Image (cartoon, rainbow, N blue to C red; front, side, top):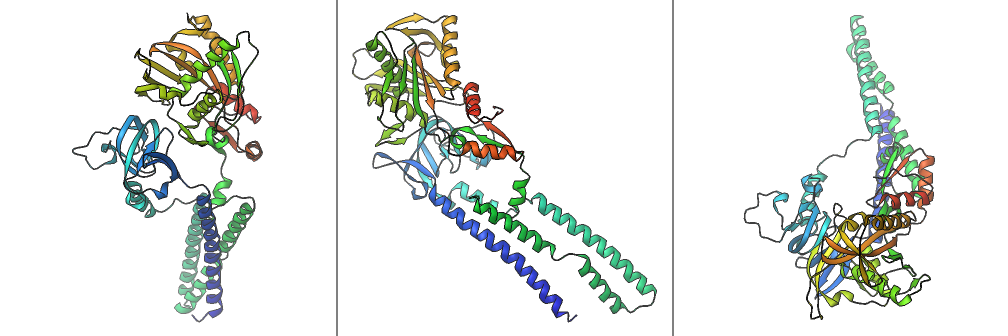
Length: 494
């Protein structure tokens, strides 16, 4: 129609919209790439017979990977060692229950991931037990890589703002075309020329649909992204800014999110009422086990030794040059034993069987026999939640003797655990015995997990913005409530 000015203005508007969105999202992508370099995914691997920790992207087929509770599987692995290993494969199968894994060969797999019980898939999460596997595929060649390629073919769901814009555009179009059709019909009935009426219709359509609206929305969202970037918040997609404004509830994990997941034993309470404070931090022997005033210090030190021995033997972690390979809770127990002058205690026993920790059982046990004693009697070493360990105890240690565990005494131990938990500490009970149903209770430890910096300020800001914060944790209720009290915030505990 030779309307060059309109054509140029519309083209410029489209270029502005596309350019602003592209530049802003490209900058966010680059920032996210830098963040992944700061905190890259790592894994525990066995190379040349020595355990080591390095970046998951450095794995190659043939490497041996060590798996423990809480680990994210870094590549597709063929398992050759499995101790009650259960892996969350919900990202593949959709099943909420963890899949039990074994090392047995599969003769006739049906093609689905769930049938491959001897394979640990990249990206899945170890929920229970431990194991070892050989890397068979990495990156895009893994099962996760194939799923990722399929996900790229799917369109992301639209945000509420995008849906509103689509709805507004559709309504404006319908109303405009209806009015334009009516006007053209009236003009035709009046004998007007068809080309003239068509020109009028096009002009009305351009006037009715606001072509400047996408520009305004895009620029507004870009300004929001830039303001958030100044506050160290990176937004990848522009419409996400509007989505964030719709958030009214945030569910946060406690361990590793609100806290730093750097466990340290700070309190020891033996079954014969000896109380000790553990100084120092980190996975090393820099610190001491300080006994509170007691009449028999030698007896107290022996009780602490018996307590920490269980924590060291019933343990899968390894500390090498202040570097922890394993779970932080187990590392904290090893560090406490080192501060008491106990090194390589687990080398004095031969492990026969392991009963790994799980979120349902809330306890871990190992069956061992002494390596150097002539008496090869089996001993069970157990650690776990107080409410799970105490019911399996029939006796408790008292100054080198074993006394019958009564209901009254059990209530006293439970009260001690609640008291420690109210201080925001994770409580673990320790016991040993000849069978799992006839254990001797030895005492408990309080483990501190320090909070992350600026957590209280962040939660306070969320509450002031009318966003509810809920803490999700597997800890005892006393511990969870104590953590919530520290931040002067009430967390509904799940």
